[in-house]
Each structure stands twice: as structure tokens, then as C-alpha cells.
Image 1 (cartoon, rainbow, N blue to C red):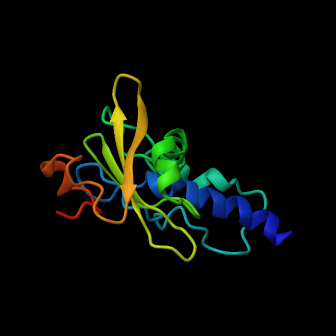
Image 2: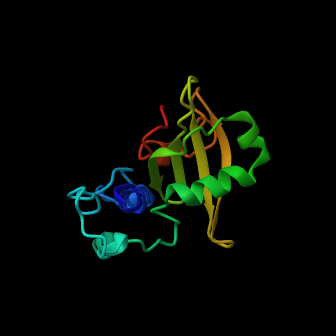
Length: 155
């Protein structure tokens, strides 16, 4: 019974991880805010797992930021070039978003972690995975002024 309660709560906490923003400029930290984490394993079953949702902003700006892992996963899967070149593993972590650009780390098993670069299309209101790899995929792709604001763009 305890597994049935904790699994939805854990899933909700993971889903909300990409939605929080603690840095000005709209970049996402990828960490679950303490208000979204379950406070006790003995939480009553009548409590809805989404009870912490009102404290987390889920509105997306005109530039697509903040963006969550599920949205980026869809963009990754839609890009044959990127999805064949980079192994996703357990999903995306450490998502960073700024002015319509995003980076995220992959979580593969027993392989090097890669950075995937995404671009938001304001007309289509959707994200596209542009490139991925371990050797600064931001180079020659992301504008230098944006690279300095994204976590995983090494200049």
C-alpha cells in the first residue's frame, strides 16, 4: 500500500523538477523545490499528489522558458539525428533555459553524460533538439551571449 502512495508522489516530484526557477532570467534549476517534495512517508492517502502544484509556476514564457524534461524528451525523440547520436538513458537532468535556448544533461548507464541543445520555435510553440554530445555542442550553434547563461555551454 505504501508503494502505491509513494510512486505517484515521487512521479509528481520528478515531473515538477524542471518547472521550478530560482535564477532570474528564467533558467530552470532542475531541482525539486522543498515544497514539492513529500515531507513524510506516512502521508495520508486522501492527500492529492498535486497539492504542492499551486506553489510552483508552470506558465511558459514567449521564449518557451521554463521547460520541463517531458517536453524536451518529446523534442529529443522527434529528432532522429540527435536521438540516434546521443543515448538518453534515465531522462534529462539539470535543464537550463534562457531566451528560447535550452540545454539538458542525459543520464545514460555506464556511458559519458552528454549535453543536448534545444531551440524554441515561437511560431510553432515547440522545442527542437538541434545537437548533442560530450564536446560542447553549444559551440558554433548557440549565440555567445546565450551560452554564458546556459549551464552546460562551455566557452
